[in-house]
Amino acid sequence: MCGELVELKTPTAPSTTSSLKTMVSTCEGELVERKRLTKPTNVKSKSNKRLTPSPLDDLSHLPTLSQRKQETFSYDINDYPFYSLVYAMFRSVKEIPDVTTSNDITTSLSSLHQHLLSFTGRTNNSPFHKAFKNVISPHMSVSPSLQKVRQNFQFIYHQFIREIVAPMLDCDPDDLYYQRTPALRIVVPSDTPVGHKHCDYEYGHQPAEVNFWIPLTEVSRTNTLYVESMPGSRDFAPLNGSLGMIFKFWGNQCLHHTVANQEMTTRVSLDFRVVDKRRFNSNFVDRKGLCPGFQVPYYYASSSDNVERPNDK
Ligand SMILES: [Fe+2]
Image (tube, rainbow, N blue to C red; front, side, top):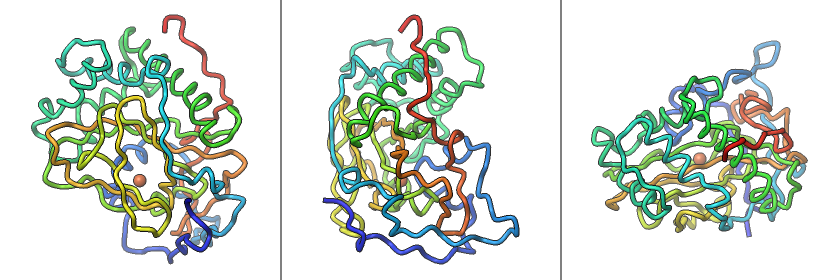
């Protein structure tokens, strides 16, 4: 069972030494997410003084015990073909094999390091990341074929939140805020880990958030994420799985980290954060005394939004 109150970490005093740039460069994928924010970012009070951090023992703004629990579920990849849509985005920038079956695509994704020879460990600026960002960002101009990929991705992601994620959190389909743009991770074989051991609260995320992680390749041994089962337990265990599985964990308070990927394969995954609307704290103040930029509707979308089904799926 996850997280009793006594296990929660106490807010620490605001740091005066770590800049935002330092923060975002040490958390896997955080750089990309912060860049996407337009407003408001790190809002201070009118007097420009830091605010009192929100208490971590406020049950009304924490996930339920059930929501905090680390769990693994499966979904139908034919109904939610993230793997093929992401692959189509990747094919727009690199000559990777023209394959269509799930086995062939996961095999090809597992070999992406052959196209990323100049990258070691972190690949946040790879051509594949740029393609992903261009296609899923509505304001970016893309070809008509990629426009279809964009519309399909937006639709299946929204439906996935409503039909798969909402039941995992014991919520109705309309009752979630979810990360508008999921994070793409591509981790190539390397001698060094990507990022460092952390919980997302350190980066200004509110404790009501629950993390979801979708592998698009096999993830196991050194090529996966290690997560503790409850805050402070230090019982780090790997998330083992493959395409068609989804992992849920309370990454806001449970530490997580990677190790050096010493397999001969690349890991490709998507992840995002979700909040039960009843537990969302719109006045959250982080441990630095700042109101983070993770707000509705900039960072979070609502699962009750109307996202139209594309004409040609
Ligand atoms: Fe994290």
